[in-house]
Length: 146
Ligand SMILES: [Zn+2]
Image (cartoon, rainbow, N blue to C red):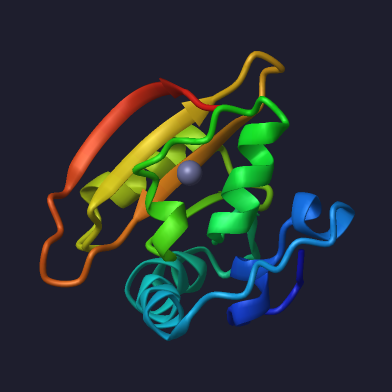
């Protein structure tokens, strides 16, 4: 988490699980480029609109991290765009997540998928992805994430 107004690449690469199990979560050059585009076209415009920090709760997941999550029984999706650096989970600090979700939907921000996700503990967050030149602008209102 950070109080800065501008994103740092490390926010997208950070993972509690990677640190706990000493797993390499460094993206390759292609995934790094995807992460940069996700920040530039999606995350940074959201942060600038609200003027408050955007807390990334899930960012890049390397193959090794994905395997660890699978071993831990967390059921990570095989086709997840987190694996290619094209997706992030986040909340906007101090803002209602559903309102943020609705704002993004109606904003001109280009995205591939926008998903309002929740878990059984009552946590809610937004999953958003960006696929340069292939964005579908698909919106999913309620999805039980893991
Ligand atoms: Zn996600």
